[in-house]
Picture: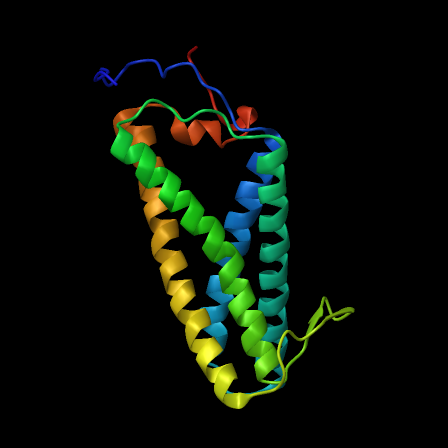
Length: 192
């Protein structure tokens, strides 16, 4: 893509469908909530408050899993717009990054669910809907799965940060409108 002057008008924009936008930003909000809550609660001493926060964390994780499944179903039903013009290495990196994000958005909650099951703490979604344990109680497996859950979370955090940096780079350095494609039209002003 040729260099454009700083005051250039963005190229024509093809937005993601509003449903895809909603699911994207809902996922982002849920990730921030789950990660922030997870960091906060692990430092607490065992108490009714900590147990309540663990329940909230698990509910958010189940919701993330469900939203990601919906996102994948939506992508199959309504494929995203073609990527903006960029070098082949960036397109490949973006493709690999997106696939890894989707995989981790499923694996992180799954590892948490398995860890919780192995530790003997069933997840009861919103204190109403019991989610079946995936494995039997096993303290050793529970600890290993908790470690895996934490490692996957750190990997997810790094990928999310990379995703944000890439989106900002495309928006403010490349000026190709990438970020605007995922924002609802009412939040963006375009000179096109």
